[in-house]
Image (tube, rainbow, N blue to C red; front, side, top):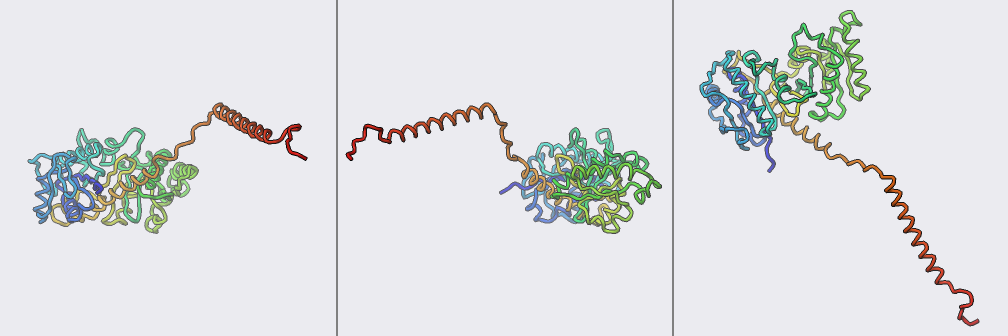
Amino acid sequence: MAKKIRVGITHGDINGISYEIILKALGNEEITELLTPVIFGSEKALQYYRKRLGMEDFRYRGISTAAEAADGHINLMDVCSPDINIDTGTATREAGQGAFAALEAAVKAQQEGQIDVLVTAPINKNTIHSDDFNFPGHTEYLQERLGHDGQRSLMILFNDAVRVALVTTHVPVSEIAQNITAESVGDTVKALDASLRRDFRCERPRIAVLALNPHCGDNGVIGNEDETIIRPTLEALRKEGILAFGPYAADGFFGSGNYARFDGVVAMYHDQGLGPFKTLAATDGVNYTAGLDYVRTSPDHGTGYDIAGHGEADETSMRQAIYRAIDIFRARRDFDFARRNPLRPLPERDAKKDERKEEKKQEKTGFKENEKKADKESAVPQAGNNTDKE
């Protein structure tokens, strides 16, 4: 029987809704028939929330390393101190340290091949911030740990209806315009195009690109970036065979349903893309970090301190993050398999070698023809030797 895909899940902020959505998403007994979950977290926190949420029947297996994870079980690797303090609904530095410990352990396990995909529960970017985690968020951290030189990670938010990528992610609004360049727009579109092909099984993806300014700048009245940067970049990309169109005015693009005509949408900045996306996606949106050698997804929401511990959190986004990580893993595997071991090119012809072969062929052919001629001549009676009587 084929080995099940191992899904590593980090517990995120222990004072938020992470454990609730993890327990609910994995609560179905049939889950282990589909995958092998490996939770990187805290046994104390899991037991606390299991009891608080009335889910005492949730069963798991403790392991020391991810390599010990067993199919047919929900596995828990405890990476936190047994004395970790749980203060539900409160942002604490201790919870941030616990989130970072889980993230570090999961990334290491993924690099070593002990898990196949990574799903990260929500973190508090303030409490996790430290000398070891000096990043605006998960995406930038994973670029550092799981990327390599020249490789660009890309945040994609998606569900069944729409996929949205961002040129700038966690950048202050005051700095957005200076980060919109021909290079940044072009690289984002290329990265999305590559991900749509490899991760989402789109053969010839159509990509819509939103304008930076209201009304596409109104011919320079409200800004000229759309005409001087974005439009020429898209024209150049189309010449390279990438089906990128726009720029489209962002205010009416989603409301009109225009997004449904495309396989992906590129927004210039965080809220331009994520505001409409989260309105459309409701509870089933997934955050995916494309462009890395590894698959990582997460729910598209935050820590939910205001409802933590009350049993009100909706686990749909977490469940979708788990399932979609598996889908992307399989899509990549199929894509790479279809393109490996291509037909080997014919070896370069050796003219002199061919010439020698031809000479030998001609010599051999000529020898046979002479043999045939000699045999024919020997079979014909010669004059003066005819013994037949007249």
